[in-house]
Image (tube, rainbow, N blue to C red; front, side, top):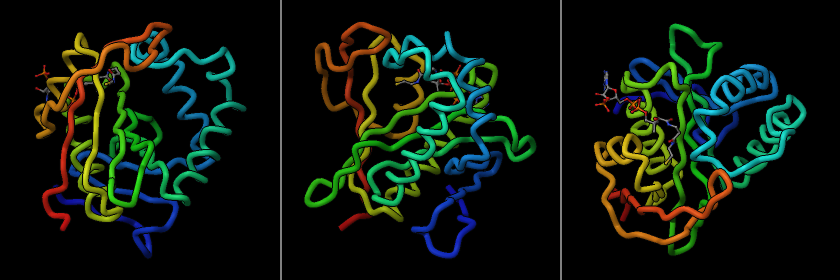
Length: 196
Ligand SMILES: CC(C)(COP(=O)(O)OP(=O)(O)OC[C@H]1O[C@@H](n2cnc3c(N)ncnc32)[C@H](O)[C@@H]1OP(=O)(O)O)[C@@H](O)C(=O)NCCC(=O)NCCS
């Protein structure tokens, strides 16, 4: 995957990655209305795969707090969240890819989450975005391992992640509470083979 970063050093905020069709970017306050539109339009599509948030989640005030928190976490290298837009339509959010629980020391590992707007499914955008984002975090944040945890019936997600070279590593019962129910999850992992 070829990408470039529009910044002076690879540790600076905001961060931007370009792929052949997409722009991945870290959100700033000015993106809040686009993010809110994306979340509201896809509320019922995303709900089965998300924790239950209160009604304030889909408000401008709450999303501004998430953006501020993501910026703080970025500066601590504890979380990296990219929003995705088409190069040809930069205002509309296609999806997001997020690395959370980034742990350093001898572990150098994190979790991967992702979702995309229903109307953009089936074009290979998420595959393109995850490939670039994982490439980035391996190369520039020097992580060794990225773990994606998926509910077994989410076959679209399993197909996607398997196609990106993630390997199945195990199964945990009642692992995460999504949409109000504790769900079993399959663990998929990609390791950074270039890290010594
Ligand atoms: C999981 C999710 C991201 C998968 O979306 P997706 O559209 O299947 O993934 P992509 O954007 O990579 O598109 C892949 C599809 O595009 C097709 N495609 C079309 N043009 C393509 C291209 N140029 N390059 C690659 N694939 C292309 C592929 O064949 C594939 O379709 P298929 O699965 O029918 O074979 C999406 O369903 C989603 O956001 N769901 C809700 C949230 C969620 O479940 N998140 C994950 C929780 S673990």
